[in-house]
Structure formats: structure tokens, C-alpha cells
Length: 550
Image (tube, rainbow, N blue to C red):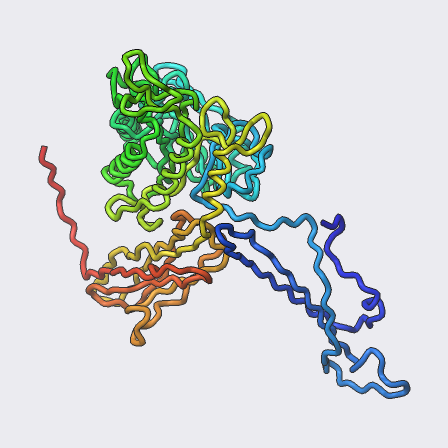
């Protein structure tokens, strides 16, 4: 790269009259080539055309020939094409919004480019975090219960304000495993409700564009869902309203719930001694893993939260490679037999962990449910997930060796999987609606609304056109309502959405159907870009008494 600023230099230019007019046209091409199982990084070609339009017809007219041109009569003489030099330019890397990672320490030490991860957590909140390749950083505010009803958090005060200011629009997680005694944040439900209330409103006041979510419980088992229910009940009792959250966040481990035994233990504030008594060999059981996700999505729907994203911000295989799982139905030469003569199960080997990783990726990418999933993301159950971990060698599954900084076999597996994925954009007209309008016998105007999302795995950075119609958009008899609306800026993938509105005037009393259509962007293949809504225009508003039976 050049150390000087972009510029043009040519001996020719010094001989050109100052009366010349320059027209500069820059065109950029974003090219993605699918080459076998690998997708080459975007190639950016920049062509700089400099067309010189001179007052005289030629730089070198015949000697003695008069030059007669009317003022303002410009005609091109020649075209010069020169290279453009950009200072400190980096081609944008191709990151997938669904894939994240948990990082212990500094992520910039590792070459994470092949992983194509779109975001990461480090279980802290850093003011100026590294963002390799433009990936997102999700801050975590850590909690500590300091008394029966008291708590503290870090960062706090001016330090927290600085982190919020330096990370506009970030996704914030409040606490890390508050349901885990001793080893993690360990906060009773009623105390967590207070801490969450303070931090949610504090962060939103400092950055209204921030998104805030609860800290991830260890695993969505009945015992942990009871903990969350207690949090929600306490919040409602304290503040007279439902706990607000922009998305839901959990962890999805498979660990034994028993006081004094290995695993996740019993959540604080709950007095039972047992929950799910998972066995060691079930720690990577993909069917249990799937069922826990379905269970949490059912819990979300029961609480009126289906229309929100679900993130699994931590999961993986914690058990070391050398540990035998004790499953007497499985024999492995490494583990041999127990003293009772029965098989001692299998170790949590490299191949076993890699198989689990692949199975979870397959599930996350394909699992949909029209009754439980997130409509803005094509009814997928989960919108993003973070493998544990990038570099924590104390547990299994680390993608990099923290000492050599080299990628491990797990990292190779992760990279091979994401490298084989195709970047996609999928614009969806999720829903269209309008609030009822009272006419009073006159013509009225209604505000029509539509939710437009991107259910692909990469963002859209070009303007998106959305139009409302008084009939099916593709029928000649249908007319556009108002003017087409533009969604500008970046529409991330994984169910990120925007709302658009338009006014519909001249409505009479009755029901009026309308349609909304989002125009596909180049390369989009899905055909779910039309939604239908209805506006009700009533002549009068009637108030009825509310009778509550005790």
C-alpha cells in the first residue's frame, strides 16, 4: 500500500490548459466467486476514467490555424485511464452473522479470518475492542450479589459510560450465567431483576440504538426455566410491567443438576437438590441438545416472546479428551473396562467433539418451526450461536492453541464448515398491519406499516425499495399507495429488520386490504417478499365496561 494520499500524477497533465474541465467517474464492482467449496473473498475493481474536455479542439492544432469555439462549446478530445491508489484500504472480509465465538483474552493474536465468525464475546466489556475483519463485539456486564437484596456490577460509573459511548448499537448481555452458584455470577432471581432493570435503562439512556438481553442461563432445563420465571415474576412485582428485552440469550450445555455433584448445580434462590440428572455420556448428546432449544422456544412462546431473536452465546464440549464417559453400552479400547467388567464408555476424543460441532451447526442452520420459530428469520429457532471456545485450553474444543497461536484440528473443522457455506441474502416482508381508524362518517387517512427483514447470513448494504399497494402487486389493476419507501444503511442478516410506513388517504368506513412488496436485491433467490395486511375503518368508537371475576 502506498504511504501517500490517493492522487493523480502524469507528465501529460502538466501540459494541459487550466481551462480544461475534468469529469471523474469511479465504478466499484463487488464480485463473489464460488470456487468449488471455497468462496473467494470479494474482489474490488476500481476503474478511474478521466475525460478531458477542452475549450480548443486539440492540444496541437495546425500551426497558424485559428481556433474558433463558442463559449461553453465543449467537445471531448481524448480519454486517459489511470490507476487509483487507496491509502490503508482493506478488502471487506466475508463474515457470517450466525457464527460467533467465545474468546479468552485478546482475539487479535489469532488469525480468525478463515473462521468467518461474525461476532464474539469475551465475558467482559471493553471500551475499544478489536474487531478483526469488521466482526461485532458483544459486551457483557458482570454481576455480583453483595447482600440479600444488594448487588454490584462491572464495569460501572464512568467506565461503563465510556464503553457504551465507544460501542454504539452493540448487543449487551447483562450477566453471565447468573443461575450458576459460586463459579459464575451467582445472583438470586429477585436481585437479578433489580440489576437488570437498572442496567437496561441506563444503557438505553446512553445509547438508544443499543440492544439489551438477559445473561445466558447455563442450559434451558425445567430448573433453569423456573429460575427465569422467578426473575420475570420479580420484575413484574417490582416495576409493574413485563421485563423488557430486545432478544433472548441462553447457553446450551448438557450438565448434571445436583447439589454437591459435577455439573451445573442448583440455581441460587431455588431450594431443591436435584434437577436434570444427566449422565456424563450425555454431555454431547445431540438429541438432548436439540430438545433443550425446542424447550426454550416453547417457553418463549408461552411468555409472548416468539417474535424475538434467540441467541446461544455459549455452548460446546467441556469434558477433556482423556476423560472416559462411563457409558456401559459403549466399548472403546482407550477406556477399556470398569472393575465390574463392563465397558467404561468412550473418551471425549477429537473426532467425537468435531462430530458434535458439525451436528450442532447442521441443526442451527436448518431447524425451523412455524409455531415456535422467529418469523423475521424464516421461522428458524436460533439466530446466532457462539462455540466455546476460541482459545481456552482448560476445556475441550478450543479452535486455537493459546501458546502457539496456531489453529487446532477443531479450528480446521470450524473453518472448513464455514468456508463451504454460500453467502445469502433473503429479504422478507414479514408482516403488514395498520391500527384501526375512526371515521366519524368522513374520509380518513390510515398509517400502514410493514416489517421487512433479512433472513440471509450476510448483510445488505444497498438501498432496499418497499412499496404498498391497494391490491396484489403483480396485478395491472393494483395501484401503489403513496410513494415507494427506501430502507437505507445496513440491514444485517439473521432476522435483522426495519419497519416502514406510508399514509393511505381517502378511506371510507369498512375494511380495506393492502399489500406490501419488498424488491429483491441482486443475487437474492427467495420469493417471500410480499405480505398482506388490512386496515379497519370504524364509524364510531364504543367503550364497554370491564368486568373482572374474582
